[in-house]
Image (cartoon, one colour):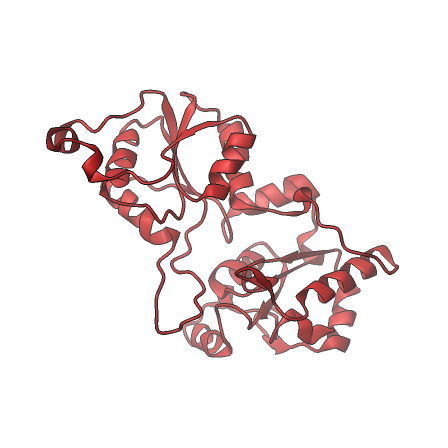
Length: 281
């Protein structure tokens, strides 16, 4: 079945779920786009929940139902044990909030401009916190040369952990003629300087799979992952023995699937596809 890329309809969907114990849904591009739910997605989630418990229900989503890269980053930090107590963060607010709620001290919040330093400081002695034991790199709209310099100098210490919450290259964009760089562009800048590879959290990497297995003990053969990116969501499923479904409401299209097939990227090819989750109602 792997890589079949068969269009699925409501009847096939219902039949498929008979052999599925767990469904993993990607969020942006699958359940919502920006601040808006994608048409039919809430109703489809309600339907899946009702089928699982065998009766009509009103879906209630709890934090424990959500797998997020910030939560995995926190667990990695807890398991690896920092040699120094603070975390230098190049990242967004959600990542910082998760660190704070878990008791980690972090620095690097907000803008950090060249104008904040004298020329001598900037070139020879940018102030560094001696208590930093980890650097986490995520998407940061304030990323600049100062932050790159600080990350690079913290990571001179081989005991300083180097983590990134994903390696997505671009954001899903409303304007197809405009490219919005994402985390990978920042990560590459840091790795180029420090000559170290980070531990990557997030799909398709095994850190996320291990986190899910540890918390939910899923059977991958009876698990379906639904996503909008072939190189992350679908690859995650293929690499770890799950069934896979691509929805076309996000990043990748059938033209992309055809391109990946010609490139013999079997790990990017889904078992099924649908236009959007609402098409399965």
